[in-house]
Image 1 (cartoon, rainbow, N blue to C red):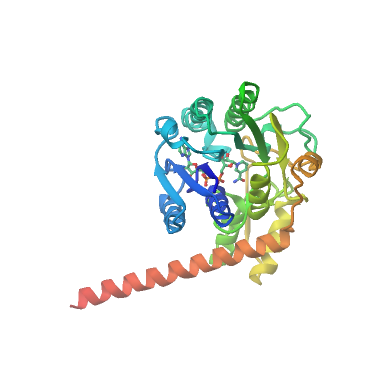
Image 2 (tube, rainbow, N blue to C red):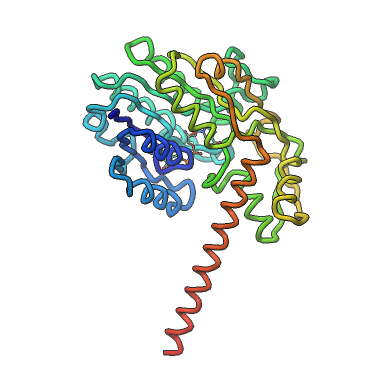
Length: 331
Ligand SMILES: NC(=O)c1ccc[n+]([C@@H]2O[C@H](COP(=O)([O-])OP(=O)(O)OC[C@H]3O[C@@H](n4cnc5c(N)ncnc54)[C@H](O)[C@@H]3O)[C@@H](O)[C@H]2O)c1
């Protein structure tokens, strides 16, 4: 049985990946710093679900000072997903982005170099490296990130791919906007679904014609698992969903999924937001054997169903809490 380390295991993508690796027979050591980028109860719930599996071990800690040397003993593959995501806050929190994306990655690479068992690092890089390049983005195009987030992801990617020349196999997967059940709460598709189901306004930054190559989380996980053993090293590979959808099109789809018209409020375009993203998937097909399987309509239906269940669960627990407090007052 092989052992791997998943950094950011309590995160949105890291928890899906860990679960899939456990199903595939791996021993998984999950490391997560439980940073406060969003409600920590979401990360704790994912970690608790994974911890029910007997081949999963959770280590809570910051990669910058976690005992990586001992954790890496016997580990063959590192899936490095820990990081500080999000474009907009990166303009205000440069130091934190540098810590979680650049320093954490540098520390991991240096610990991996000293660990005899580690064969490969698969890194969760980002389409934000391309900035406003013409679509579709090819890995051979020059990179020009337009946000501190994108720049820190580029620095980390360079450090990781650089380690390929000194004995480690390293692959950087450039993920394109990932969505699906358990999506991060700051991302547009989840915010839209929550607002629509609550009957609130959807806040759209800009006119909504900007588009994204939305990638369903199971497809991202599949590509990430393939990258652990594919004959590819020392290079970046795009992982996209196979189509480009504008925010206005996503909202139309959402209206069909919730069965009613939604109310939209437009706000100024956010700094650092690129106009369009679209992955050229030639390299992913040829080197990883990856082809996305989930079309946007089906994937968003899954996410909206998950959001609906979550809101219902919350409504039930709030109702229970107020009933309880009513009873205790009467007593
Ligand atoms: N979600 C997307 O659309 C997307 C797109 C491109 C790239 N990515 C990259 O994929 C990775 C996972 O993204 P996500 O959406 O699951 O985000 P997430 O915030 O849900 O998960 C990241 C996890 O990393 C942990 N973490 C952060 N800094 C850490 C540190 N210094 N030490 C230990 N743990 C730390 C956080 O606590 C969190 O649980 C990130 O590196 C992100 O940059 C995500």
